[in-house]
Length: 416
Image 1 (tube, rainbow, N blue to C red):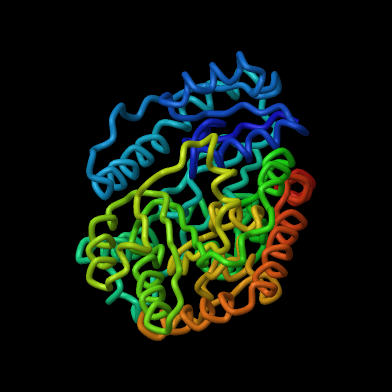
Image 2: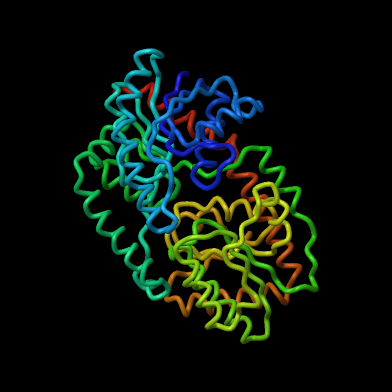
């Protein structure tokens, strides 16, 4: 089948959204001929990957130019990326229509970004259209606003306003109602998109975050015995925004310290909350236990994961969590908030889901878990083993392809 894929972010050498886009495209290309429209800034990396044999002949690219350089301020850069994404969506239909005249696609699909707020117009091509997997429906809990810096509070308020206007947008409503299928990653997104669509028909759960077999084996190989005599080591990654809950994690580490337990915590990403979190760590007296914003090189990332015991990311607004899953594959025990995406792939037999209450209460709950795991390293080992099995068995490329092919079959066999 000839698939037209809209993936503004797609790069086998990238991170976050771009590596996710690549995972989806490369997986689909094993069963289908894929024609991908992506952003021009990925062209050089994709062409070099093609020369190295990473990009198969079944994937073809065309590019749209959106912008060149991101603003050094991470929050401004985030807003800048949204403007570029809107521009991308405004231009993708014209290029897609021209390519469709040349190739004759069987189906069009939106891949990245995974947000419902900026609709796709590919449904206008007159061929079956799959919008997603898509999310971005998660709501930051008001009870936890006190954990955010002023800047992050403003961002969450802005996002609420943006949600209000997006729900009023006729373009968004048309996209939701004209799409032949809307796969979503979790139950909250299922309910939200069903309301926008006005029907549950065509809206279904599809776990969009997954890993190719090679990546699974690479991370599995890092699941080696940890030194039970050293302090617990916890890991976190992902764009360092307030929603990631790192401020609550720092408070939990301080609480554990007060109970006589030392936990070393490394956050390997940067973002608009970085300085706020560094200041918080100093005020809590745990700066000697915390490393914030020091990245691992891509080639060292898998090996580094093997040195951690825990993945501590009590995210308060997350559709999934690729970095949490990667850490689980490497044998880290996840501690997450019982909220949206992570709450569905973390189960009680492989990790911990902390009820979303108030930041102080959540920090106390996490501290109790840290103390329990510090005193019972055998439990830590068992949970880490099950965590890796959980992701390997349920979030692999085969599972994703089976889900997508079932959606394609339903769409193509239905009376449009």
